[in-house]
Image (tube, rainbow, N blue to C red):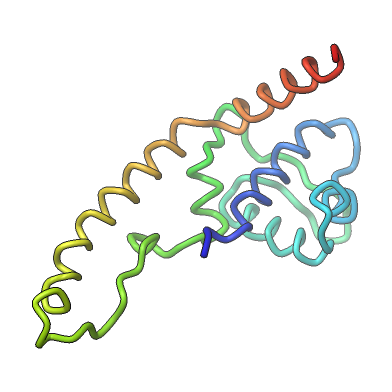
Length: 147
């Protein structure tokens, strides 16, 4: 099981909107790059709008960034697309056997470890901006064009 792909698609959408800032970033255009259905793009774009990351207007095709690239972190996207509820990145199975010493103690043992791991992930995501992603893609494109 992995984190919902909505996170990666959200990052893809924001990055592509910047790359296409002089064009119209319609759901069809974005879906073409993501290689998915425009309805999914509209759903995720709606989540990004609700979080204040993009601007979209009914009846007008295209999305625009609502903030500067340097002001949008991967953590902002992660939270915007509801990848996981707060403090539930790692779920602990319910109802282990209380008659077993492991079953009796597993939740209280691994729960805090999972919480620390989620905090570390969120801290790492908070240190990377969409601007960083855009710059990395530009560098990769430069290297590829030299080959």
